[in-house]
Length: 217
Image (cartoon, rainbow, N blue to C red):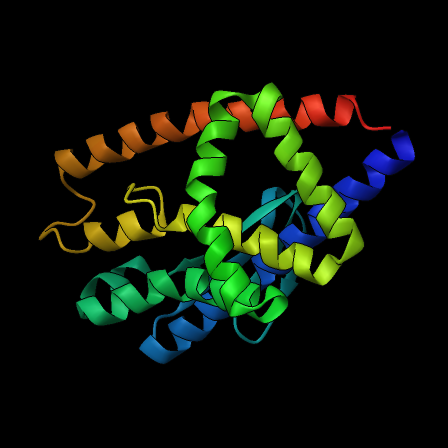
């Protein structure tokens, strides 16, 4: 039971690491194309365990193995035309979708993205009855074919990026249409609402994961 759970958690962390690398590499490339300085690249969250000095910028490696971000020069970013700002925001999600298509095929990626909203919402509403079985199906598939498993993981994750919430890339792209962008009360209120919407969603899926791993044999 413990060995199986550790193997599956390790596989999930591997997928998350690859996705983070793809996202970060695409964002760095977009910064180079738009001539925006990068202040730092953070791989994983939390206080840095290692700080590596690279020719491009400092690379911070945190102790919480989840997520990443590229800290860019926001003053320079604000002066770029809308197309350049959209490229900066969309580069990561587009790269993740392309990596999913390369791993499991274009047709399968499209199918997984179309079914993602229904599965993710139903799993959030019924984390034990529906969420945990979906997680079991994912791990069963990923264990048999890890490359295709990553494609499934990336496709489902990329679907969240196109939610029109300020905390998501598509929402951030829409914010760029505002004259003052993020410096308005309306945008701040929308960001708060978006965070409040996502929080219970994430908590429900955390319950689903706990329920699944509790019953792993």
